[in-house]
Length: 94
Image 1 (tube, rainbow, N blue to C red):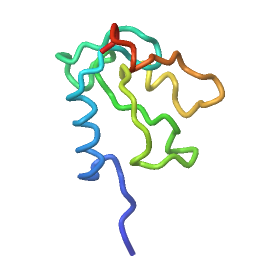
Image 2 (cartoon, one colour; image 1 turned 90 degrees about the vertical axis):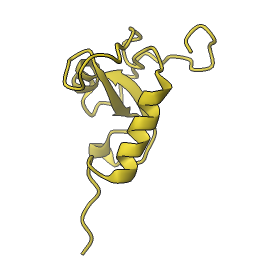
Image 3 (cartoon, rainbow, N blue to C red; image 1 turned 60 degrees about the vertical axis):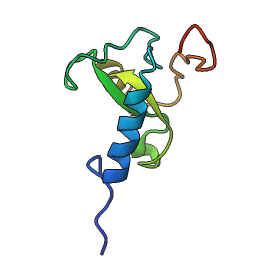
């Protein structure tokens, strides 16, 4: 029997690091700046948010977007209420 993939999965951690390395400046939920110098457990620090929550069938390797830890926690597994979306193609954002 294979062990279920969790947040400590090597490939998932590589994807989160790649997203973090992009340094996308804004949280996709609230639109405010993310301070990448803050420690990972800080409420305004970077986390990778699953667009489709894993608890609702989303894949561990599904689409990830940058979010503040507090925003990600507050959003929980809700999908009915769309968070504020940032246009990543906007040159003013990247």
